[in-house]
Image (cartoon, rainbow, N blue to C red; front, side):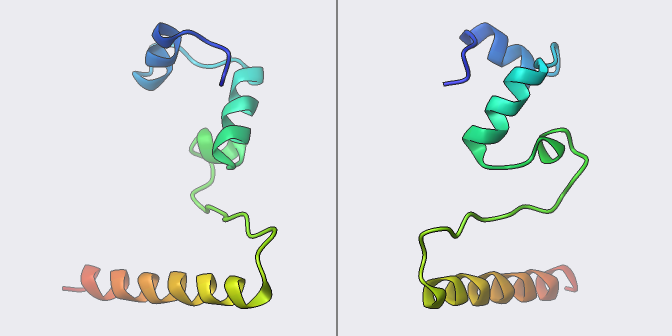
Amino acid sequence: MVGVNKNTMCSYENDVRQPSYEILVRLATIYRVSTDYLLGCESKRTVDVSGLTPKEIQTITELVASMTEKNKKLEGL
């Protein structure tokens, strides 16, 4: 999918090599994240909700808020 062989991908994963700009953009597209996120410059993640109904988007928003609150409580223990 990315256009590199398995050994090259392993080199990226093990921080032996860095992907080119073109490969970085392909990875961001495949994983639906920004290149900043892949580079560790941004910790915020987004979810593609295109194609969902307003009710479905609301349900996902509520689920994320609920999980975030639960995790905050667990961290406080």
